[in-house]
Structures are given as structure tokens and as C-alpha cells.
Image (cartoon, rainbow, N blue to C red; front, side, top):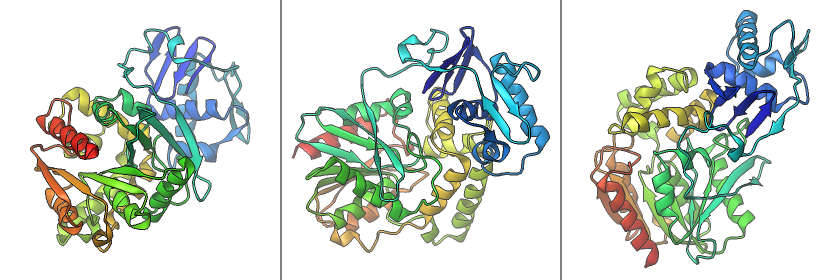
Length: 401
């Protein structure tokens, strides 16, 4: 969403604030405070709500919160004395009071729209209500009239709009939407789906997928499962086998990290969950650099920076930790013998995040599954890699059969 108030424009998708046509540099927490106040401008936002939303419930002193409000006012040209934009409601909280109007993308000043936007693909983002009332965002790309429907199961750190701009994911979306009707959705707690959710379990995620299929009234389609989305794809295929034509699995795992027989590896994962809740998406964070290097050790500086930013844009620190814990408990090993759909399994040979033996477990567990190893160290294949082009060729050929 993009909003204009006075001489300011807030772009909530690019995490940018401009004033008088110039980008204003603000800290992430300052931006998040401003964004939350703006989005909830029809009411007073309490201090507790800001702390829960921006700091994920961590202890924050009154002085620290006051400092962020002061920085918000300074960024938009307001003051504590004037309070013409952000008003303090003593004893209750704060309210954004300046008139606001939505702004179309093509109305953005050039100085604001300076990041590359991927225009070759157009999409309409829509929502459906899942079994527990959670709003899940989804979109359709490619050929709407194609008989081949490819439904990509959700994986974490996705954002339906931002992924189209990102040099990390846009080549995937472009290639895999050629000649098919490609359906994508953001997992609960991620991207453009509802962020503040009370329940995030593996069963919730599979049921979200079932609700999307029901919402779109899909009778026959193929599934694409990437990373933890591979487990959901295999699981769904056992629940509704008549609906699943084919399955493509890339970089998936049959069992989560808690099933690792190496106690040291489990300890490292537990520590990672704790770090996510404190270091996720923070500016200049050594943790997010470490996390990015595990997923894409051969990324260019630009690609790494986009992936760093994706962490912050797609999911909150608390939700990232919760999801990482949930992934550790996934186990579909007992279901694989019941998967009857033709299956293609691909995996990067030197994937450091999800080692290749995880892909082999899918290939050996699912009857007659094909297995293709790809020459790469990256969990997310980059556009320049021969491995990516090999993956696309195998996927397209498999879907045409």
C-alpha cells in the first residue's frame, strides 16, 4: 500500500518514506511505528499495541517508545508541540490525524520509485478465508486459459508482490508461469496474508492449502512444493489423490530438523530459533547475513541484500521463530508410500540449508519418483546458474508429459 499525506508518501511494500520528493532515511522501528499508526488512523493506538506489533511484546521503556514517536514526527515534518500529523492522546496512546489518500504506483515520484520493478508479469492479489477465519492472500499468473494448473504450496519468507521485484525469486515466477496457470499464496503469518495469527502449525498450513483448492473449485492440478512446501504437497496428495495430477518437489525435506540424529545440529537449530526472535530483520544484523549465506552462499551483493530485506518484509521476528520451530517437527515419512501421483524431485547437490539426502528421501519414499540432482550450492537457485535453467527444463518437460 502507498499513502500520501501532505508532502509525504509512505510506500508500505518497499518500506520507503519520501518527503518533498526525497527519500527519508528512517530506522526500521520508526518506519513500522509510522506505518501502524497510519494504517489504524481511524482510532487511537495504545502504547501496548505498538509494543506488541513493532517490538513483538519485548520489554520497551517509555523513553524508548517516546524516542521512536519523536523520530516519526521528525521524519514527516511534525513536532511534539504542533502534533499536526501524530497526536498524543494522553493516558491512552497515539493517533495519526492528518488526511491521507491512497496513491497509485504510477503516481510515485521518480525518486521514490527508484528500485527495479518487474513489469513483465501482472497479477491481481485476492484473499480467501481459511478454516479458522485467517485471511490468506493468493494470486494467479501465466495463461488463465491453460489446461495446466500449477499450484505452488506456500513456503516461508514469501511476499506475493515483493517477490515479483526481487532478483531472488522473479526469474522463478517468470519461468514457471510460462504456458500454465500458476497459483501462488502467502503462508499464514507471512507476506500479504494475515500476520497476527494465534495458531501456526503444520496441520494449519495443509488445511490452508485445502481451503484454497476449495475456494478456487479446482478439480485437477499439479503441485509445486519448494523447501517445507514439499512436505505439504506430498501430504495433500494423500488426502485428495484424485485432484493431484503431478507433483514437483524442489529442495524439500521429509522430516524436520528435530529428527536429525546429530545432537549438535539440533542445538544449532534451537539457537537459530532464538536468534530469529531477536535478530530477524534488524538493520546491519550479522544474523541475517549469516542466514542469507546459508540459503544463497553464491549470491551477488545485490541478491543478498534483497534476500536480507525479504526477511524483514515477509515475516515478523516472533513469527519467524515460531515457523522455524514448527518446521523442525514436520514428519511425512509415513505418508510417502501413499503418494500415487507422478512425482519429480529436484535438489541442489551441495545445498547447505537442506542437504541433498532430504531430496533422496522423497525420491526413495514415493513410488517411481524421478530424481534430478542440480550442480549448485544455493538452496534458492539464482538466475545465472546453469542449475536453474536445468530445473526449468525438467519442470516444463514433466508438466507437458
